[in-house]
Image 1 (tube, rainbow, N blue to C red):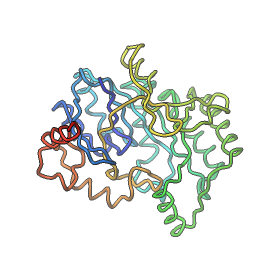
Image 2 (image 1 turned 90 degrees about the vertical axis):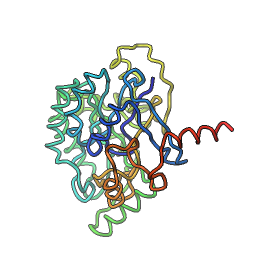
Image 3 (image 1 turned 135 degrees about the vertical axis):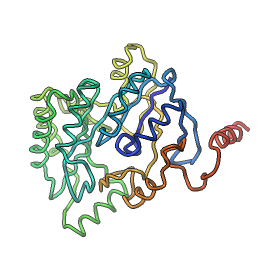
Image 4 (image 1 turned 30 degrees about the horizontal axis):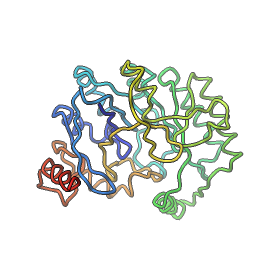
Length: 316
């Protein structure tokens, strides 16, 4: 059995819910390795899926399909990101109040333990200084009390594409971005932890090592063995660790998403180079295709034949 991630690479619930449900009904999907381009076929039948792990900023388009997933015997939990930065950092994100309302509705359906709030990434800038995060996090935590039990945080990673996109904001709007010092980071996390605890929320890290020296900040796992064990009712669930980068605590999953397909336009995003590319990909998307985003070189081809040929070549 396999854990299916949908997806670290794009927002499947917000933009590709119809495609996802069509693939569930068909019992399989294809996905492409983003580095090698190799095509894989993955079963999505209930007996082959341990659970779905969803990442999203807007779960509503998928929520209407949850009764069908339940009836088919699937198990799942959600990561829902709410930061509330607004423009120009987040150009097309849901209004925070709408996102919070969606989380509350989702928690009523699946339970607060299976809705993880992501305050991620923490961006330190002249527009979003340390004081901003203390105030904003407190506002959001108060509104989410009772609907979530866990909040995952991370600080912004300055990948090459991220630096380029942030430089554009600096040039156009004058905002200055910086990484916090170790002391600033520690003080902020201690305050966020105390705020979270007042609202019954545990603060956990995503690919950060703060848990090793800040009390009551815990190491988080987005594809979390303990949460999956509780969800499936299998205490001895056999899933191998599969970190995606340093300090990652995740177990193995198969990600069926595709990069450069999310339309939310977050300037700091590592998964989308720019929104214009994502819009073109979305416009070319076929909700009845077996793959979320079919590369142009593969249009018109039978992907199962390509999978078989690729596997044969790999063996020979």
